[in-house]
Amino acid sequence: MGEYRMRRKLVAGNWKMHGMQASLPQVEAIAAAAAEYPGVDVALCLPATLIAPASAVAGTLPVGGQDCHAADQGAHTGCIAAPMLVEAGASLVIVGHSERRADQGERDADIKAKAEAAHRHGLRAILCVGETLAQRDAGEAETVVTGQVAASMPDGADADWLAIAYEPVWAIGTGRTPTEADVAAMHGAIRAKLTALLGGDTAARMRVLYGGSVNG
Image (tube, rainbow, N blue to C red; front, side, top):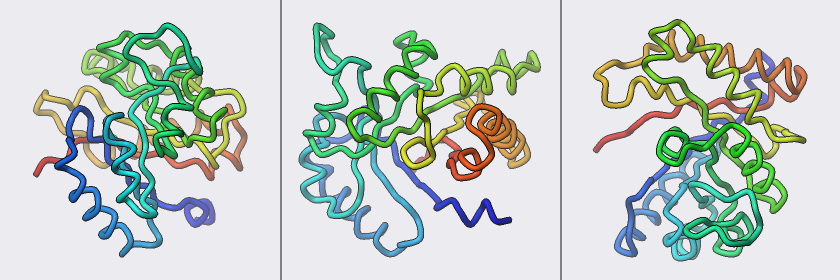
């Protein structure tokens, strides 16, 4: 029971490729609502173009990015570096989201390097993992996800700046919904892997999130 008291709840909203300047009042409204729950950490991960203006109106609500490059600068057209996010006002960043793993072919080694870049520049990171429908139906779900955790884990990982987000990719657009037992079992497997990798104290303090869609 003690380990649960060590972890503050974290709710992070990923706006994906949504949001324009006209969305800033919504950011302000979310910030105001979040302030009513001082025992919960709330954050918004926004398109890069919204980070600076959102930071100006978000007050104490942390604003973050949805990805960062492993390099601090260079010939990487269309990418954004961790120090750029920091300059824009971000305090956290998502790495390894399932859409980037699928659409951009990101590998675990790439994600590990991105998380390390984020930490190098003082950003907190949310490292995403999850299995596909084919992998779950083949009985490989825990093997795949814990393998992603191990291979994507940045050097020097600590609960102070890293959280893990489990997103069951197989539940996206398939009509299949994970049960509470499904999620609890996977979270247990992830925490067991964290214990093996980082030790019991760090694993107990590290937050493991559930990633899913919210409509409405």
